[in-house]
Length: 221
Image (cartoon, rainbow, N blue to C red; front, side, top):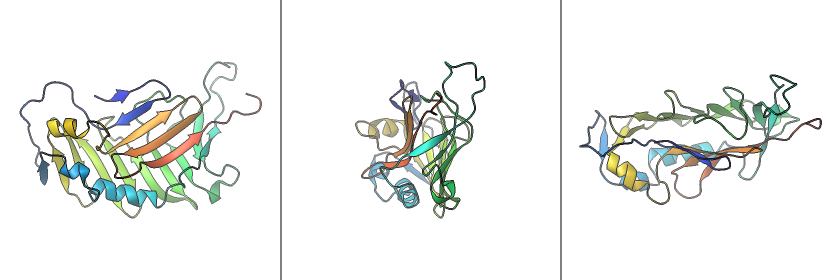
């Protein structure tokens, strides 16, 4: 079950399955785990790729500014602004980080998935996030570190590390290991009517912000 909360709250992307915890059916994977040891390991491949991402992401505490796209209907003044890419240095895009979205968006965010790419200064790819088969899947690619993927198994998520190793927890472990502070890999999206933040969840230590972008109305708005 994906949690979609009210504006100002978070959309948290980790994989849940409704229904009773039936006898676990395992897919053919390298490592079937039945405890929280992998999730708690600060050196697991999710933490490793998350730390690699942090090396090229915008500095913590800084914000980017959305580019305001022309309204679909200029006469519809009640329509929320249509927002495009986000520039950390809006007047000199080539000198700062840029967050490129697969499609225009409005705030607060009204969707369960968000495909985007964070470019480092100079246009070098840093992080790419996509949901290839909808909200039950996730793909995180970090330049120089490879791709971490979450795909849907029989009754629990399967995590695929950059080296190809597959980790398959049981449904009960996914549930129990997520009690309290989340230890599960995922993307948390938090939005209001003026800002949007994407964070890597389930990482050891402090959370890692992928981007934090704000909407600044044009003077005529």
